[in-house]
Image (tube, rainbow, N blue to C red; front, top):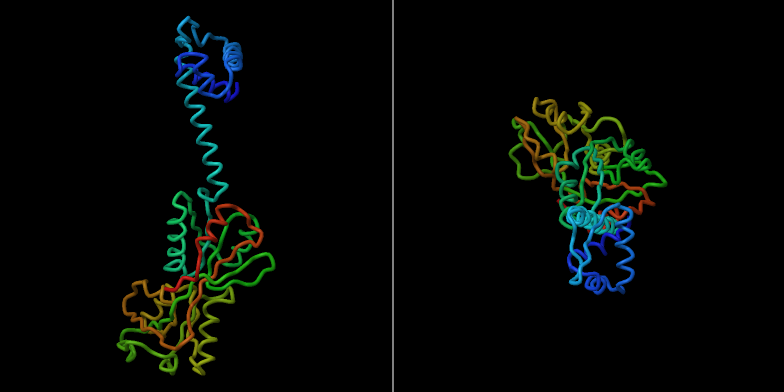
Length: 294
């Protein structure tokens, strides 16, 4: 059974004649007659009663018409979806993230992608940045986000967003009421870094910024993540330098003050396989556009 036979059959049923069906499908009448005859032979039923006025569906033909229409419609939809997938208009994009970029940068970037490709399915998974390299190579994920990545020859890493820095202080700190601060204002305070391990990381960027400003702070603790770091600030264990996105975390007893030192920002990087040619990934890369500023 071929789709061509089904289309011919539907045309005969709807036109009520073999001649009308032939005109509709742009062939001569004999091929239509042959295909309908072959279809009846294959099914073992009579689909039409031939009359001087045309062709009338039998009961078997009426039942078969419902199914034939559904099959042809499904084949048409399958073709349309296949072509849409090839254009990157539909498909699944699996995205991994690590760290505080999930609070602002990653959602903003993915919202822009979904606005351009509304039928795309986006799956989000939390994953360490080194594990992201493995997942990119295996095809488990399409793109990964983190503040920083270790270099790899087969993986491209691009900066896609940047945001200003803030300092988180206990509310009882004398600086907690300031409208803005510079790194030099923090002298004498204990520093809480995050994340711990898995370098390079945002912790390294903080230490580099302090070194460049010639500010020396004693490191009181290295917290596993931003939430743990803020909890330590809350209990008065020290201060913490954070990206703006972390200020969305509500933690009792913590005040956030923007740092006005020029040039200090927190980047978000996107990692992907250099040879990824998947249409949905290509559509995602088109949606990135210019770097997102928060």
